[in-house]
Amino acid sequence: QQNTVTAEPSSPPSPPSSTTCPLCRAPLSEASVLGLLLPVRARTALETDPALFCATPLAEDAPPLRCVVSVLDRKSGRARGAPLLALRVQGHGGRDALLVARASSRASSGRMASKYEVLQGDTVLATLTRNVLGTRWTVKSGDIRTHVDYAVNRLANRPRAMRVRRNSINLRSRAPEYNPRLQGFCLDFFGRARLASVRNFQLVDADEPTVPNDPHAEQKCKLLFGRWSADSFHLDVKHPFSPAEAFAVAVSSFATKLATI
Image (cartoon, rainbow, N blue to C red; front, top):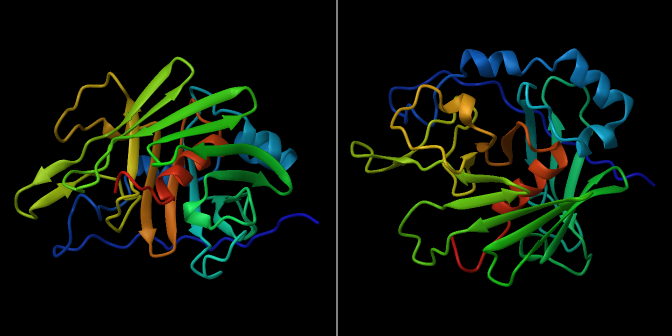
């Protein structure tokens, strides 16, 4: 029997408020609004062969694939073997999840498992394993191996930092900027995140210099994961990732870690 999970649709963007952080709750950029319209080519590929679509890396010139990730284990009470997260593509009709992430062993508790599977229906498209401390994760999708490393930070005295290596491509998390007025770190998510979360991240090229208030930051972002509500995140995918790989990297950010925040 096929694995079918219903994913909740995202809420429409709310207008900016003068009482909230303008970096976290900015309105959607024009590029993001246009990106919510799923291109005909992507829609055709998705509907023709969903598994192949999810396993295929996005083309270098393809626009971002905008997705919604729903948190499922709140409703299941974190039961062993229950699905952890579900993904659907924005701009594509239907409520059934395109991808589901779950612990690979039904004896494992979702957020503390040592191995996860990303499934399209009953087909496993990617696996995700970690070391004991949760600082090194390995995504396997077909012949591709992607390594995700989180900086050790047990004191939680600085923002979470991560590096991703996919074959010869090296990426790092975009560092937030300290806002003295808010007395905290802020990062512009281009209207794709409304809530602060340690799980939020953006990946850019590892050799990309840090530019304060960079006007081209959205174009440079290769993968974005931002919290939209208590039970949903936005995941924006670009080359070189496939949807399944990107989802697995997001799972690594979501899962519990012992040596970092």
